[in-house]
Image: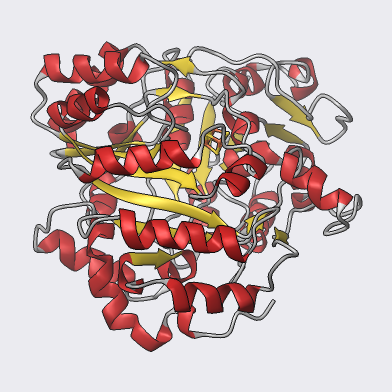
Length: 479
Ligand code: SF4
């Protein structure tokens, strides 16, 4: 019978900001509630993660270890960087220094569990949420006893790791981030904590991996449970701003309204951000309710402002709906970060110009645009099917290391030329590659000390001024 479980969060990415390991904390809480003596080792700020892991193993000698992998790489076509060699070093250190039962999990693993097990030379993975699966794995007399448990994947699986069919209620275990993570360290980089109102996504965008991480349907949390979690976070951490990190905040229909009404009832005296909102069907009434509930900033994710591209990306809404959302948000007090993904199938000079004209003409000074070029190809996505058909990747490619799709109608350098010439004010645009700027962490830290109101992306024009000639838009795009 296993008793001491160590959960290790391996993510150390600082760009654009360190992210508190909320998922790993959720698993640690589930294990603790199931009676395991549990610890969480967060490697975010560790300079020498291998040494830190070895020390944790010799200090405590756990008999079960859960390793969490947030992302396989940075998803940046122009400066790709895989995180997996680092993860491999950590898992090697664990194998050399412990005989504990090991399982890997987290979003990076859920997308390609079998490939990840092969690469790390490990036997067991959790695909998707782990509150029940990981508990069952450590409760079992031997791992083989739970090899058919929903979410458990072994390195021998042939088909079972292609799709997870059963998912749990996201209210099964109440998250307790502050109980497991030193949240103050994260708050130093921007005083905002993550919260999740739902899991899953019923949309089917061409490139997206969400259905493998959280499933193909919406699973909603009780609004009162979400409000209670926020209330406790306020009491325990002093944080006053929270970001909803759901797949899409304003879907399915009606849930956002229920959640916001509940937040208003609780009178939490907090502010809220939203990481991802769809332009689809947005109404004036919804925007007014969002303002009343304390939402001050949203990430809105049309990915394009051209019908042809929206269709090829399978976004499920039109250019007209994107324009309508812009009109509604322009007249509100909510700051919006408009996210675009350029270089997908059928993207050409005309569609790129349409999106740039939207950025020029429809995004007001209070708002910014976030621009990613090139699409990371992940297995089991429509993007992968298309890339295979077009010969961009071959069927023997595991896709563990970053591979990208870029439209064959333009070269990257031609796209850069169009963007550079067409944008009237490039300072209001954040390019993914510019978020690697090493001083960003120090600027964030200063912003927090100076108590600048968040979101910090709203100061992007100052950062862009500082970066100036070093910005990616001013360098050749060679790929
Ligand atoms: S709406 Fe967002 S989360 Fe849902 S499938 Fe599309 S990209 Fe993925």
